[in-house]
Length: 216
Image 1 (cartoon, rainbow, N blue to C red):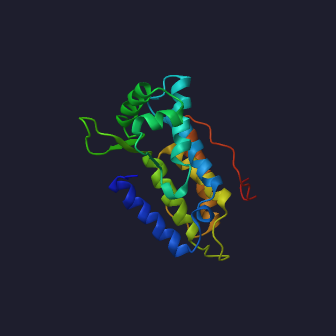
Image 2 (cartoon, one colour):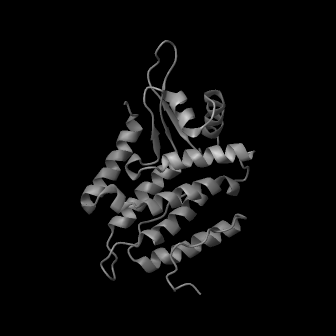
Image 3 (tube, one colour):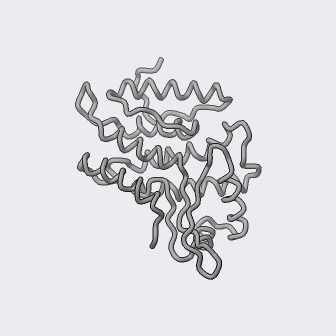
């Protein structure tokens, strides 16, 4: 399987963070965080000035693509494809290749881009699809890995995965990332601030996974 150089670069960054933390990918960025990123990605288009998802079918397809892009933390927001290319991805997402191609083109044109597609060298006049990337997912997997690798300045523990998940879902909805917080109370405060930012954009903040007891 060939992979684009862009994937190799960010995968190496993830691996460096993982190696420094001396944990497995799943221990560093557990499934709860990956599911939270996918959930935020699914809801994010509703906060855009112009929602690019015009139908339920498009929303469902985008949700399935977000799930694929967050299937494994070490894939850092990429969906890597084999020789089947576009047809393989269409089969995985349960849609016709022609329909998928049209949506991929549309979502690449959004600002900021909802996704990026990478093709290989042309064979018989056709450039095979190598991978699809959801850039926000890439940024947030790296952010979550870094956040989970930093020991809390107060108690010496890594941030609770559900607290990181709460922040990651809200960040995904807003299409951004945040700093790596040195204490869990700072991260907890950030979750509240991100929820307020979502409200200002006309959205509803997701329900928290971890209630720390600090919010009044």
